[in-house]
Image (cartoon, rainbow, N blue to C red; front, side):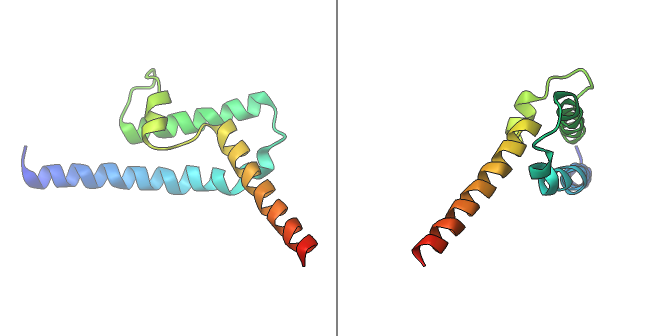
Length: 103
């Protein structure tokens, strides 16, 4: 394969991955603490968006399993993202409260 063609393919794959991260993951990450009370059905829809995004970035078929792909991209599942963000907020809150008590 021509070196220039390989470079162009790598740029396309990288730009696709960057676009997905910007549009999907960052948007979900910014609001996932507010998603804590969602029903299972709505979380399933969010997970479907993540799965489709992972398939798009990896170039997989629609029927392909994406669990390993999500792990290789270091992406958490929708429920795990929500729990992770809530744990971060709880840690920050406990540090603030501890500081107020000591001060």
